[in-house]
Image 1 (cartoon, rainbow, N blue to C red):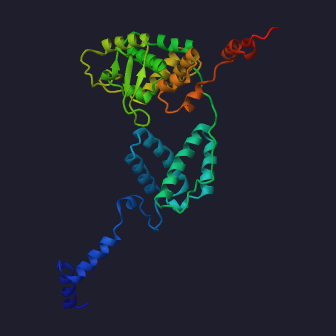
Image 2 (image 1 turned 120 degrees about the vertical axis):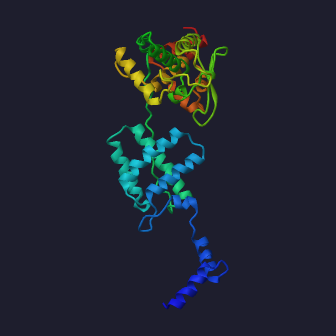
Image 3 (image 1 turned 30 degrees about the vertical axis):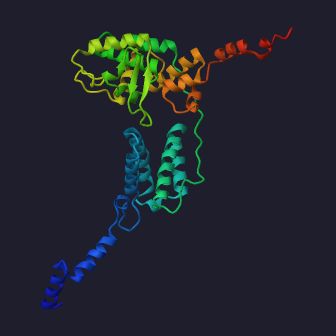
Length: 340
């Protein structure tokens, strides 16, 4: 190219009114990739990157107002899946997904496998809807959820947990945490997010803000838990403002879910229990205790904050003695008054 020709081209592409510059702007505008598609970017060979597709999917969950915990659970499931199946979304096949889940089953229990299955199904449904894959790889693939029943915690175990808490600052806090979880059936994520202002002693309720499903709801506690909460707030110190977290460290930092789990496991060992009891076991305890004393599944549903009775039905597994006793009181023929 001659120097004169280069000079003419340079003027054409820098002059805002030149046809050449307008043609290039038109090309750039129409070749621009929208942000959602860029999030699911391409690999060096032009195939969609699985890692980028996962990030775009997680972003879509955040935009849809999923909780941070739910988004994190999706990430924990999808990250090892991406490492196992390869860098490109085109590397994923139905057979590959089946092999991945089968290998997973050899390492973890059936409940965990079903969690992975449900998260992968959500991811590939989204990928199909936005056009990243031509068809849903999970179509026709099912993994049955194991019908396991919660391991019930017995009364004596809760008493031992409460008695294992010393009269120290931390001991009073831990005893209050155990009492609230066992009495109200709160999820641990709900309990550690409670603020001082959320406790209402007049109605013996707590306000659970942005609980599961991003729904505010009331939680309930009894007289003994109210006494324990008062004792904890007295020990915690008058410096606590209403906006401070209810459960915290001496430094004022809020307890995390994992810190609370560690506390309960330590108390289980100190109490000499046959197994470590976690926060969800205490939630099960609250549900089964209420059900045994009332037989009211709707009450269990409302106390635990379930949206339907389906989850509450899981707690309707009374012991053999309970079933026998209830049957003898409800025997159709015994209550019919048929003469012997």
